Image 1 (cartoon, protein in one colour):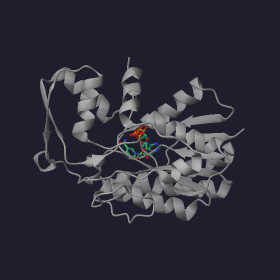
Image 2 (cartoon, rainbow, N blue to C red):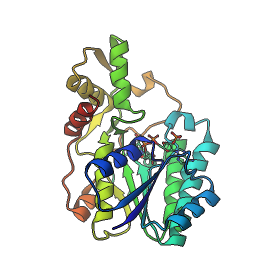
Image 3 (cartoon, rainbow, N blue to C red):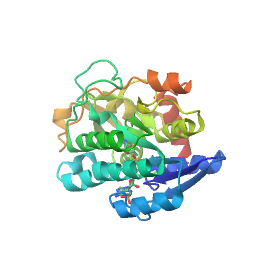
Image 4 (tube, helix red, strand yellow):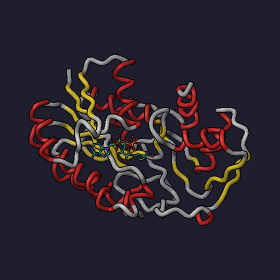
Length: 285
Ligand SMILES: NC(=O)c1ccc[n+]([C@@H]2O[C@H](COP(=O)([O-])OP(=O)(O)OC[C@H]3O[C@@H](n4cnc5c(N)ncnc54)[C@H](OP(=O)(O)O)[C@@H]3O)[C@@H](O)[C@H]2O)c1
């Protein structure tokens, strides 16, 4: 039996882990800490929690995730994504805890045209990706036992995400334009949660960086179209170019990730993004 600390527990990934721990049953003990319970930017709080808890694993779901706001909020993004990651990694090192740290496809600049592998050169385009990348480095430097799981385009029935925004907009508007020249893979946070729990329950796989998203590829336009089809929304949807919809943060044009390493290590089959989207929309009922 393992004792597992989950940070950032009120975010969408944290809530998915909580739901699975409750509904699927687990021989492990999960301890969920929201940002109000445990601020990962405060080392004194973090180390006290780890000393008291004597955890076997920590899943870090806490992050500064507002990609556009980060462009004008470097200090706060750095505090959570870099200092927070360093604090957790250091506490894990001091207490012999294995850290599962979540990172992002936005560590890549999107200039490739084939799926990114874990060893590809990173070069983040914006503050969010840059701070997540620096956070990865802190984990590697300070946690002897770590898994960095890079994921992409997370959505779920919980918290704020693209799927929920699209469904809200479909109820408010008759027409919508969505960018059709950024390609990646939507990932159901519950599928990611299952894989994280699987890593914990498997005989240790090699420490290091792993890519995990759902299978398949899509543009944001494809993603929106599938949401409306599955949810039976009638809305006039049009594709637009990124330049026609300027946002503060630059995003990679292509950020599909190669999942061979995690599939091989865990001997898993990953669900296709459209199949998982159906499950997520069903879970909204
Ligand atoms: N969302 C995506 O599309 C996406 C894509 C790729 C990778 N990821 C990565 O996946 C992970 C999970 O993302 P998510 O979508 O579940 O994010 P989320 O829903 O935004 O949740 C993040 C959580 O972190 C908490 N948090 C923020 N600052 C904190 C602090 N100082 N101490 C403790 N907790 C803090 C937030 O609490 P408050 O709400 O109280 O601030 C929030 O509950 C993150 O590492 C993210 O970078 C996300």
